[in-house]
Image 1 (tube, rainbow, N blue to C red):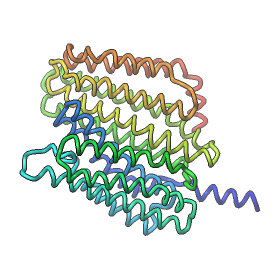
Image 2 (image 1 turned 90 degrees about the horizontal axis):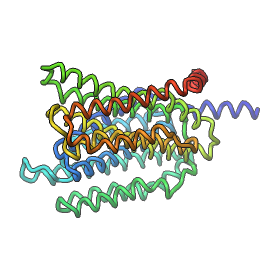
Image 3 (image 1 turned 135 degrees about the vertical axis):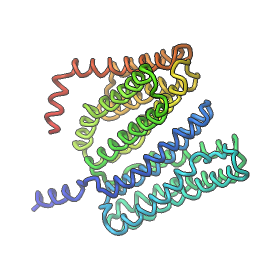
Image 4 (image 1 turned 120 degrees about the horizontal axis):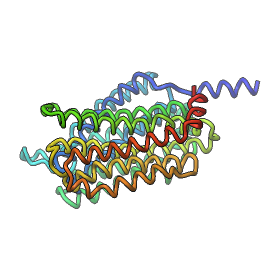
Length: 397
């Protein structure tokens, strides 16, 4: 009887990603495109900070709905309706991204309108998230208690972003955004993971899919940047070089890292599992996605003039964004296995060393150097760890 109950509990907690969740993720695809466009319109240091701030709050809203999918059946009536409504609301939030900080000036009064739209819709998305967890908590008291602990910080952060829309554009609004992000993103660390439940396969797959989404947005940015400029062999080769770099980023995550991390999460005790899911997926994957979005910006701006050196901020986006992505991998392994990946750390440092090169060499040279570092890393790891890599992938199959 005891073993039967245990098996029943196991079946109950294991979930698959549903078509509704994949549909929900399409809004996040558009949101990432908007973030890249926001930074491309103002590729200054302040513009990059604004883009990362917007990405962070959008990511945190998306993360909330991942926990809904891993906690309950997203195809049931209440979750389905709530997620569809939240999806439409989040789409409005993404539409307002270019004016989230009130930096637009094309239409009189438009700055305040877009900032207000962003704040109102973002708060609405978060309120729906809390209400749905309250409904789920009726049948799962532990989840309900955890949601009630989390709600004050979550709603306070979203509320402050709405309040910021009424402040003048500039440092007052930026400061309030910073406070809001600290409260919103920091709340799960304060409230803890007691009461939450996670389906390891579902959780790992959703975050793996969002890495693909981010890489896909980078491919779109690359394609948009050269759509009207395929007039020389150098441009065509540069496009292939950029695509190869993106393919290397995919390889570095999905060849081994994603498999090992899911295996680690699945084998962790229940009390450790939720904290591990929160830290290594919610927090660390934000670092990875931020790095990919910056890289997308760097690639897009590189093709503005493939023969000219990059601006300092664009060079940082290209090389620094990739380094940030690798730092995310280092943190991911450290949190999951408690060890460092030396070769990825070396490559991250090497990419930062190449930052000044990007400001003096033609853009196509920067792309070649970036690809060379990543291709060298992929080749080294594939050959050097081929036996352990083979065992891990066979075990996963």
